[in-house]
Length: 105
Image (cartoon, rainbow, N blue to C red; front, side, top):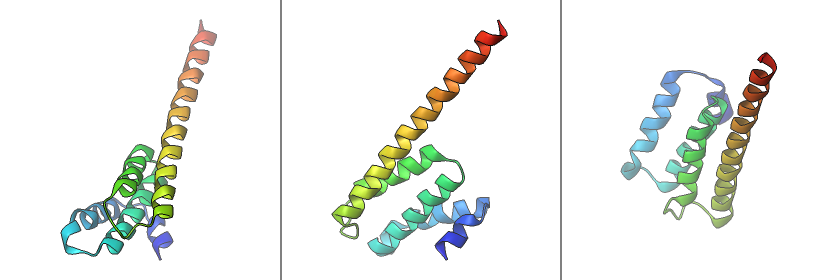
């Protein structure tokens, strides 16, 4: 079901995920981690890589017993991988612009 939800590209869905993760005090930690997990996946699929990376980092740093050490390590690794990929894409785009500007002259 989570994968089906992630296929929907609606602002309301993003706002729903944000609201659900904002009410931390009223829900079990396991449920909260699952909602953050959906939120980062939604942002990644929506092309908001930086936001997704921040959420992954937040999950990895969370003071929660609901996240095992291997899972915490996986979230941290994904956050680092997303950050590196995002920086690489930025450098590639910058090089393309420089090359195109050089060809125009």
